[in-house]
Length: 315
Image (cartoon, rainbow, N blue to C red; front, side, top):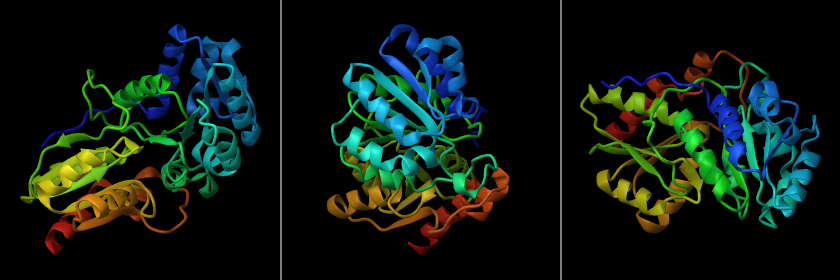
């Protein structure tokens, strides 16, 4: 069984990478919502203080300023917790950024279930469903530090609004150092024949661990990582679904409107396939240690393995 190496958190990779990118891309500026020590925009601030704008807890205004900066040819990276950038500033994003297709990159830090016991109001696991429903929006959710670094380079080359999902904890390494993220492309990370599993973000690491464990039970999982939830790589999704004839989606996100919804929409039109949508149910979350939260809300690697095994048994 393959054991995943330990890696840095996505937020650390984010802080380090944007600081490096700014050395050669003079368009890059960072706007922070008083979360720099948590999201690691503090690394950028130390290196490029003249291109760092501390906006405080004024998320709506921060997104508006970013939109204005984009009209001047700058590429603003806006960083705060996912719950604040998506929910609190939703109208500013919709009207000032998405509608005019402003070249603004929005970093949703502390996304998902694991927010470091900051409080239940800080949990945001319906962000993908909200942002992918918005016209002109691109939605990216990397799995590890390698993909985070590569994806940040890619979105800086893309002209248009991007929502980039960043989780808090350290994350195992899925990809080799030479991996290159391609916007709008899904990636097969494990070949299998019995069931196709689609996952996104850091849940892919848990899905991989689940797949490796299931191999001991004779279940061969075909695992596809979907880092770009919008636009969805429909061709890869359909091909992977047809390979096994059974689909399970899994995500650290609500089961309503996230990756599972996107996959279901694509398959309903192109290749109807029996499927199970696995993730956080239609609930609000709570504060707690990472392990117990993953287990309680059913998305730990063990609970993910059980969901996949159940889908195979019922097929």
